[in-house]
Length: 240
Image (cartoon, rainbow, N blue to C red; front, side, top):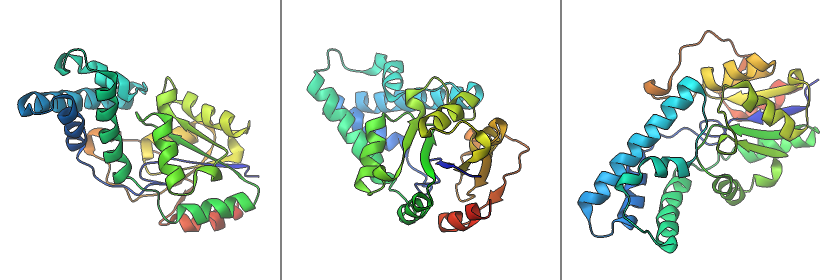
């Protein structure tokens, strides 16, 4: 019997969108190096390189990281003695850039409400560098935050998906002990489907994301179902 449904975030609850990461970093860099285009460009490039390196480590070793660590990795390109208010202003423009790129799928709310009406526990497990409050602000704005029993972000963990510790953390967060009573819904065969199956969950694949080649890991895994629309999920789970 299914007791809980746990969702990936980017590419699943939020439709996939190819975003210019450098543009987001440049906004931050322009605040820190106001009026100095050359130093701002160098900082943005360094931040993107640091972020790419962190994601490569997440792909290969499943090590989680945070935006704060990315900033620290590029510290050589930061201005000296940045006032706290200036740092906060830089982070805010970066945050607003990203929150504007990744709204919640309009179908998510009705689907989540339908699942809750059946007594299912709902959660999120996402590999992300964002702090928790950024995600909660996005969900709150889109009217879905209160529909989840728990959300687990890898920025609060030591490991990213597909590490089993991340999936078990999500199970613990929603209060379900049996992985066989959990369904995981995601858009990445390696991170989401193989990770969920490895711990004993059922896995539902949503195949709409254009995963960058550098983030792909070949894997021989078969989801329990493939969905073209989130709105088909309640009917699917009803049959399980």
